[in-house]
Length: 213
Image 1 (spheres, rainbow, N blue to C red):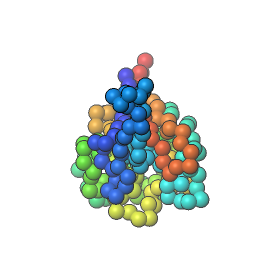
Image 2: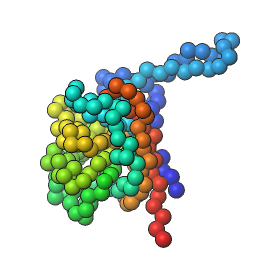
Image 3: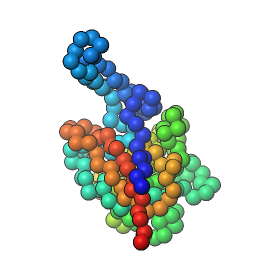
Image 4: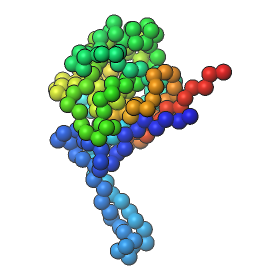
């Protein structure tokens, strides 16, 4: 069974406040006598589900064409926040050990329940602490995905979690739709679009249920 965990790149998807919204116009329309319909879009790549490139937070780091496919395809684990977790508290190393049972998989997707998938841009959302992000990478993490708009807080200007992950050859997926996906083991299929020279790339993210024999 396939779960589509993508938030659409579309006009109805909230953009980060102040960022370029998705706009679709037309270069050619059959109604105007042209032989085909041709669409043209203007958008930030951070609208909808996307992978941040290291360039997003550091001008000397690699751009979107350097996103490594093997980080975005393969076994993944979906986890959810502990019951009653305070949204204002960062997830620390001890909580991650508890959530993961002490074993860090290559790919982890966190369901916070705070997402643009509900139709509005949220005011804040839970995040990893910097020390937790560094610990996860030290344990072999290659991909950290979230249903929230960012792996850092909305008001963060230093983007410490981005730096802790992207600066250590781990990658991020943001704006996932995990509302209908139970916690557990899956196969992730979420290769970024091959875009050159950008700070992020759109992603169609899928989870395949793991069949146990």
